[in-house]
Amino acid sequence: MKKTIEVAAACIENENREILCALRSHHMSLPNKWEFPGGKIKKDETAHVALQREISEELDCKITTGEIICEHTHEYDTFIIHIHVIQATIIEGTLKASEHAKLIWLSKEHLDSIVWAPADIPAVEKIMKAKRSSS
Image (cartoon, rainbow, N blue to C red; front, side):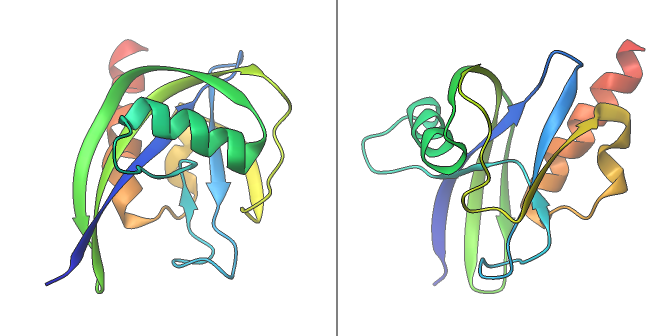
């Protein structure tokens, strides 16, 4: 039976209403795929608490978290991921890519111009659809 991993991921929006996209490095699984930054939810942690911890560890920033944009389960070859994509805003610090190969800001309508990790795609689609319906 495949292991299910609970993950919290941040949809961080800047003052220009752009979304932070993180490129997985070559030593990570799914190298050269883009994702929302975040990580595993530890036992006894909520998704929001896990996300604040992970962003602090990975990007050296403090965030506030908002609503869950998308919750989704995706089955990879060797494991299953249950991802909680949560709205977030940076409140302190400057982004540093310690684990990712690259960080970029993209406008919502251009999120589909990069190659996303499969588990992140439903959230990308939801964000783009919401942007289209609001413009």
